[in-house]
Length: 184
Length: 111
Ligand SMILES: [Zn+2]
Ligand SMILES: [Zn+2]
Ligand SMILES: [Zn+2]
Image (cartoon, rainbow over all chains, first blue to last red; front, top):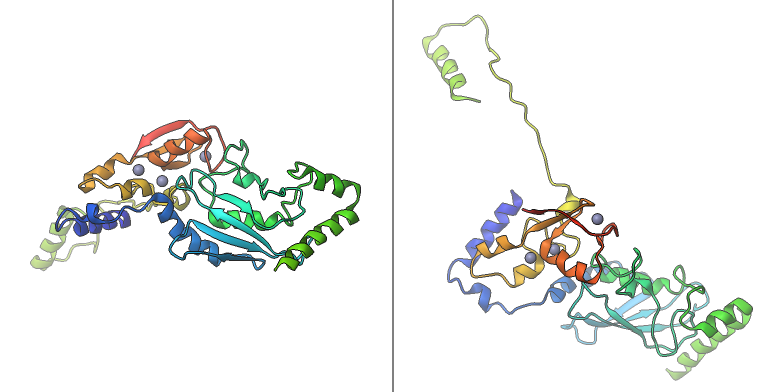
């Protein structure tokens, strides 16, 4: 019933001149999804995260800042650039880490190994169009805690250091944090 | 309630005759309520109700509302439903149901 009512209303709105549809600027599916998802992301932002839009009118590009409050990276401030491509949500957003850090799943070039952001994963951890921006934020935030993975590293040196000597690893992590703080 | 029942009652009243019984149960109609399962009702890919045109088709809507009938619903063997438009785009990337990860195969299509 509700569905029918809504359809009827829509028809009435479009009827007067018949050109309504064409005169409306075409908005991409991505942008329509983003309107909902950005709001949802902001409402569910973890306390360790903040989001900044360079251009408030462009919802497809933003900077996510993660300030972990537990674990090895406590005290650090890590920036990620998130770019939502035109093919969203068939494709995951493209994410780069802008802050240099010592982390087994993020290399010095800022490439990130997070299954959620992988297009071709064959298990339930990979990208799926049922995922939303808030899940991406949650995933990146968890790279410093729950999703931290030393078994399948991108920065192999970091993972091996951790296995050999956790104190050395911790020191190196904090050294990187000190360097990025000195730059500011 | 059928028209016959009403006539019988009206006649009884106007004639002022009192029947033995106040009411006679002539017919019993069972009424059932049903509703769409809310979870299946919304396409998990574009987040629009499956009975409505998908987000893609809404943007590219044809001259009139009849064009929207092209946007059909597809049910997988896993019983999950999506817009056919949405699902056909996704299976090109990954031939699995995005909700349950099962291999995707179409059970039926329609409205
Ligand atoms: Zn859909
Ligand atoms: Zn459609
Ligand atoms: Zn399924």
